[in-house]
Length: 451
Image (cartoon, rainbow, N blue to C red; front, side, top):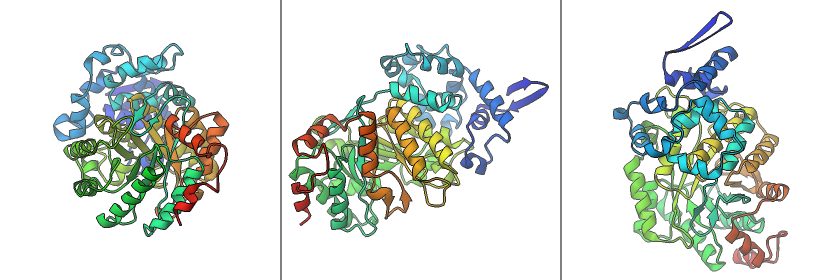
């Protein structure tokens, strides 16, 4: 039991799970689940209580029992007790203060990352302002490598997302090449297929592989199909760069996606066996999003932001090249407006990077959310300042297949120029060599490729 009393008012929180939920900045998903604080006063009381919780308490009071959930078992079994000793004396509040000290370095944060559990990181995020989240996220630098080096300080990458509602190869190619001409695509050329037909997905893989090989582009490709389909394609010797899967923060959430941890291990081993990287071999690509566990009725009474942080424990187990939180995609039932999407984006970036992950964000909203492109512009600059690894490059910021709004090729380019950031170093060199770094080169051979 946690208790807070002030001015003759007493607030009681029966357990750590409830305390975390009540301390969370307001969002529609937690209200929908009946987990949110019922008043501003209750939320502040919960945050005061949470600030006094020792970090070690999160190792004793598991939100889902060890015996009932394989994600809980993963969190405990992978915890580094030696690294934790460096911060074990902290409460949530004093840990926040230490993170924000200017003398706390990137190297120190890298040393402790495996001593942190997702619940510890989620807890400290709940008592931080937006600017606090940005300051700490920027200090967390987690580079990854496949055909280029992603996540370095001073760099800001992008995924080309040339989706097509009919998986038309020429339609995909047109959008893809437009993105390259804008200097996008160093994180990945990633396509959400409209069909799960392995034959169609294989054709898209061959298109991407041919383009990358023909023009010697230092990037990687991925068709974001289910893990089982990717494994089938690998068996058929289809050229697969990255192994993709959506993941969640509870065992039941992952079951709703048709996966478990052993299947993810099989995917990792299959991807590594291809040895298609040139500067590294981190071959896994994961996507997450606040609200996914609640929408699957698999949240186990945990608030959606803490569930999201638990998904990052799943991701880091498999040493991914990319992790992408698709902020705002599920809809206003979970993140109602631009303010809630903004907060969630900064929380996800902070939590993922502090846990050691190469975090990117798909800043997005559905057409029935109380958000617009101005909100995305503002969030885009904030996360770029805070050291976000990559964002989406969608033609016109309008995904015509998934029917949601995101960020465009020129949004990426403008943000890089505004803040003096560059694509991945190998990709930036390729752009320079091909005359694509300064402005769109409409005479480039890529244009002829489509013909």
